[in-house]
Image (cartoon, rainbow, N blue to C red):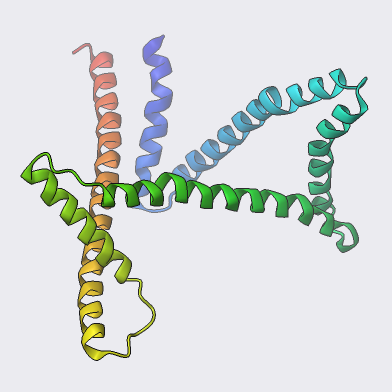
Length: 215
């Protein structure tokens, strides 16, 4: 029974591998199946963890007008989104209100996360003095210089002093190489993860074939 059930992921994996020879109908079938299952799962999760608890909380707050009004706001914004489905210009513009709210909050979260989670820690690490060993000192120096030349690679203005501009251009050129090295490391990490996933799928197929053959 387990071998028969394992045949389903085996077939789906082989259908995905058919993408090697081109955009085949088998690959599109798996792609549509994945999108459909993902959307179905998302709808179920949203219903049980978002919509249903929100309705229960709204009904529970029916005796408190202020609280009920506050909890009714998300439903009103969701209803405004449905006006875009009608396709009528007289009412579809109402969907811009919740969309603007979503994009505004999302942009604020992204900017705040970038500042607090990326830029600020990198600035603190670049300015931190670690004199415990020679390797730590060299690492701090390399990190500080790399951060400076990388920022200089985004310079859009030119200095009136030719000598100063020559130094800035040289540092910006080094900064672009630092960016290329960083992107290379990121790409290598992504390829390593993809190869690990491919290796896991191939091992799964080999183990299934061995189980079927009794090897």
